Length: 156
Image (cartoon, rainbow, N blue to C red; front, side, top):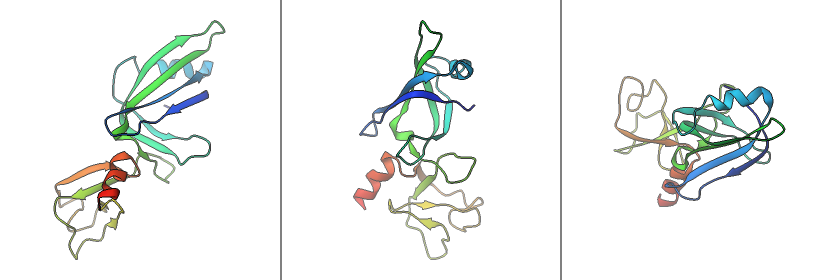
């Protein structure tokens, strides 16, 4: 689903336990699309959230329609919300989606070909012997550039 909010207001939580919120006015065309999120039900995903002057964000799941109200002019004011721990930077690929990092429970070895991240994690590639598709490594996944990623970067 694609949608646009006019006069958007984005509130980002400052800690991993908080909740991010985005509110704004939907156009008539988008009103029904936002309404399908279903008030209070989790599961939707934001592939790419662009805000002027900031890098694109993505949320891989648990986005819900927190509030909706009909204005007298026919516009629909909506507020979307999601757990802050899910927020990350959007992929540069046109399909969007969140860039996921993984912190392996053991340090990557010499055969690891994955891209290393400042947080101490890796962005796995399918052909890596340690972290690839066939390895099924035990790792902690988190959105790249999100609050968890920043928290781990400070620790390392």
